[in-house]
Image (tube, rainbow, N blue to C red; front, side, top):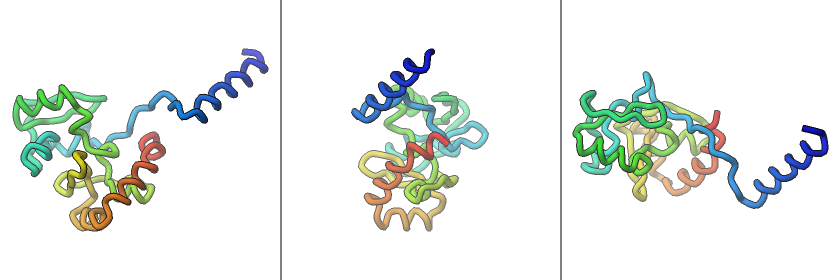
Length: 151
């Protein structure tokens, strides 16, 4: 590519970004020790029963390179049909840490469902702190996540 063409390509890319058109999405970082998402808990169970239930190796789905386990075939099938509906926000990393601009592991039993979305926290104590102003923390984490999720 000649130098003028390269400049033009950079100019065009900058114009597209400034117009609000997003760049191609990068793979999102996911907290999945040993390749198992949600700590081996059934992600659908947080919505179906309001409490985490351990998944079984008999019912699994691989999504974006991560294996998720489910308590039943029905939960597995629901997830397979709409994974984004059930996946935890911020790749399963601590929502409070994401609000503060950092990544932290999570305890899948320290969770909240807010406005139909699943959030994990580092611990029950951090969960209480996060819930004290969940709306503001979600706004901050949403701003920080594009950078954190690409790290």
